Image (cartoon, rainbow, N blue to C red; front, side, top):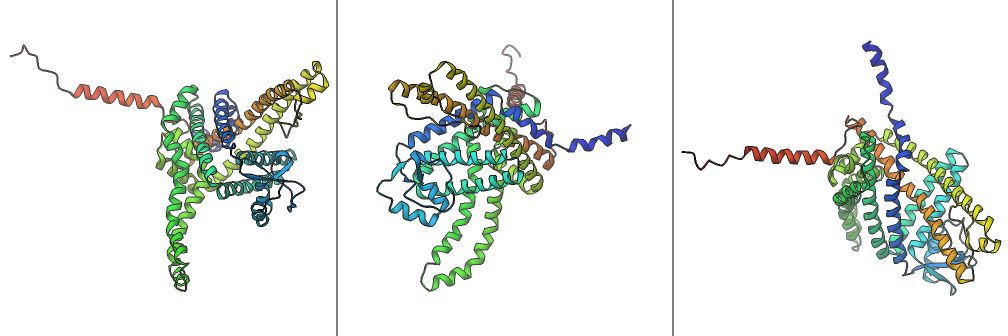
Length: 445
């Protein structure tokens, strides 16, 4: 009988099916509310900062760039981000000497158009049902996204420092709350209230923000001696000799920088769950995520790939649901609305483009109606993006629990709870009270 029970135990080692629970948790209203609020805060910050328009926009007939153009084109133009991605050599001359009829837009608008186009490209690749094309499109999109961030920090440094700092704080707080909700539900089936999760994220905000930034700061500090060596190399005659002689010192530091950067890239998504599960500080969160990366890299890669493919399919379903929702609403609305007004205020929608397009109506009432309709369709679109944010943190929380089981042997049901801390503090107060001496009776002899 014992052998029969032991024969079934290997089935418990297959933990990856737990990843498929991510969709049901990510789609819950509490997580979508947090993610949508974070997205709205980031968009508001971007729209306000875009009052200063610094990105050059060219007319399509003014520039000829090799290859296709990625990214939405404001007012039918090509942004300098498009030019940078397609021809970095030609980009500098276009920006320094733009055509006389050029216009300008904001950095957030340019990045938002680029992100929207990349998301549509990946969605279209997924619709092709070709897994190789989807993976290739996803990898190319990640590479272009990294180039877009480099463009923003290189040519719009002050804007990027402020905007990405705001985005980091907002996403860290939202991620901490979502991961906390997921950790409690996944580990013990507890459905914590939204206020409690937000309170947890607020108290641990310093750790949530420092965890993804700290390794980059450490890597930069380790790179300063190498940077100094490069500065020394500019000295005439002796500089290149000293650079060659001292290069082994730089090569000693480079492996540590590489280890940190690889751990940061592969373990970034595990840092927020580490805080949510363990109530970790910055060092513990980074250490646990790096431990998962380097102790079980292939298992972590498999879990990440599985969650990515599953998340893409789920996002496609959410986009399709949003498109059907808008299509049904528009169809019934147009039954009672005249054709002229329906064309003026209601955007067309395609499954790969939930937002759709709408013309510019002339009458002020049509403009107001189109604006209100546009606002609500943007809200539906925002919910599809909020689902991506929610799924990212939810799936990574599940992956962290599975990796913790493989690396540390910690049970899936084990999670830090605030009640445990409160009970320990109460026990400490009771112990101190019992240890204090009784006051002497004044009537005793």
